[in-house]
Length: 148
Image 1 (spheres, rainbow, N blue to C red):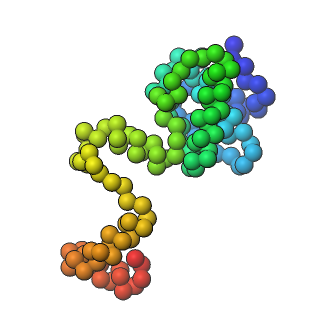
Image 2 (image 1 turned 180 degrees about the vertical axis):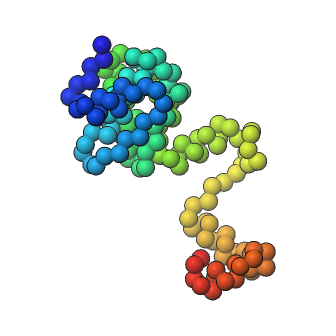
């Protein structure tokens, strides 16, 4: 029998929902991380879900690191041997990048592709603004209106 600890009814429902994904939205300090950690343990321990089938997306690196640390600690406390690196835990952006890297062969990207940060994106537009004016219909109007 799984030990739900001090979780409330809503948390118990999220932890034990094993059919499909769960979206957890709650304010600060309400136990989102605790719920996700316990759900991960529940899926592995009670449902036999393989680590590579677990996907947890957060908005911040801090939250992702906290999740990884707490899941690792909980697995260790329960003496469950699992490679946490097989799980997909991270920010939306980091997880998308990981999926791209793992499946690069089915994309049109080359091995040495590069993701552009905000500065690089703006600089690329700046470098190519004159050729874009002629190539993209309505581009000049966008520039003049200050939308770019």
